[in-house]
Amino acid sequence: MMVKQCFGSAKVPLSPAVRAGDFVYVSGQVPVRDDGTFVSGGIAEQTEQVLENVKAVLKLAGCTMDDVVKTTAWIADARDFSGFNAAYGSYFPKDPPARSTVESRLMLDIKVEIEAVAYKPL
Image (tube, rainbow, N blue to C red; front, side):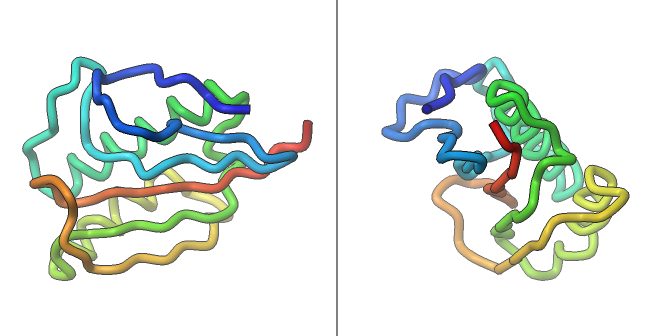
């Protein structure tokens, strides 16, 4: 089952999330607001927006952040890792999911992108 997009007006060939059995795979989310504008702040502000977007997509699939078992994060500058980690940690205060974080040049002029995998039995 594919989840329909709930925000932004991006015309890209992907689904915000796809359910495969008991797993929900959330596509990489970027720091874009509901109106399609990008958050221009630092790593903390961008990470918060990205995770709000992850949360919104999960909700459409009947999941919450508590259902997330794995994330992959890309940050544009490894020197931002501590600010990223602080913002990220506030969304997973207890039993955080497994995570991979890499420094990478991103497709847009942004500081962070995060994808998630949630487990929620049907």
